[in-house]
Amino acid sequence: MQKALLYFVAIAFFGAVIYQGAGNLVVENPAVKLAEHDQLIMYSITDCEYCEIKRRELARAEIPYVEYVVDRQPHAGNELMGKLNQAGFSPKQMGYPTFDVKGTIVPNNPPLIQIKKLIEEQPPRSMM
Image 1 (cartoon, rainbow, N blue to C red):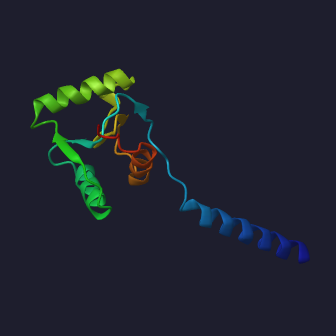
Image 2: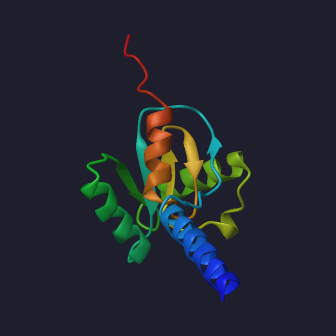
């Protein structure tokens, strides 16, 4: 009986620790640094539910960004494909929205926490 109680307490303790830490887990998308700049650019497509969700997240977080809708702006699609190729990502494996965070390309709808982290890692360039 004592052994069973000890097992129960140990399982409950470690379960609580794992549950508490689960909120801090974030799976980040691969990111590749390209030419630095001072913008957050979101590449989206028309009628993309994930793009709409990301717009709301960015608005709630009060993060300014520029959006290019690649199926309506052909130059933006070409620009995105060039950046993906330069970064070594296959455009066939890429999903929307894709972000260019101050020169770091992050495809496949990255979590907002990853976008914030990249913004904070790259301070604004000084104006001369």
